[in-house]
Length: 467
Image (cartoon, rainbow, N blue to C red):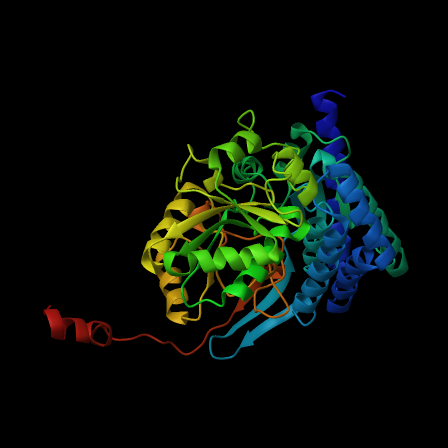
């Protein structure tokens, strides 16, 4: 198929999506939008379907592991449905007599979503649910390896749609095989573009000429200070770092431990399955054998990772992840960046202030805006990081990859896409959520004038500095 035929194929898909969205909105109600979102949620959460999608995702992408994918598909979707259960996305959502303004929720239209191979079912489902909740249609562009899981997910959604009499064209994907030409045309014809994945895709979205929401690169850095519960910190780091074989952008990539508790934390980490490695050069040579991340290590189970890094027999048999002592930061020190594997860089800091400086330097290299973690009993230190570090989230005393994208024991919205603000080159600084999938029309009425005198505005200024 030539490029022109590819363009025409995508244009046909987008036209069907636009027609379906117009009808969905014209006959819309809060109940309809809620039921559609629930239908998409049950499509991935039904246990047999969830299991099939998880297995298919691992088989086709070679990333992550099946049990954790099942958990992710379930909990991320359940949490999202909890978040949106009472959200008003249709009709009048605000009526303020004082301002004379009434707000009516309106869909954004047709959403174009680019989704990654790391979460080929959970991320599409998240976007689909949010889109449907807001009265929108959505067209997905999965990564090449994510196509099979996306196709199966859509089939499950259509089965649920048939129960409600909903048009299948509300949820579609760019026809396989995908291509840059197809994705580009989808972006250009979307009313709103949402991109999760590579920074190259994010940049393409921001330059496609349509309103776009992209998310930044992860390179999570976590500080463990001298006040921390070291055993709890080690357990949480391990649970997070190993979950789904570190496919999450919220997995720890660097640990900064203050000197006073460094040895004790290493011992606590070892008890959880984190092996200390001092041969930084050796790990780098195996992890980046040709300047690119070793595919035999990326998002692999611990046993495969140890074989690929030639660490069998050099660390305990029950090792779950490797913590590699390092000092360098920047392009010449690849361990200071994202590794997408069960490998974390381990830095020693003189004290908390030094740890903050190291963290800032790491984020300046990669991961600015995304998030930072802190294990500490001194809450003032969390506030200090939040006021000084270029980050949108400071995750305190939690397993980072579970907490950043929303958890049942914190207040963050459930999401698989984290906005990183201007630090990360993004237009949003919060977790992608249902609010980003609606807009409002304002009915503006006349009210009694509220006009201050010049003296009321400038009185205090004049008193201090004169006219």
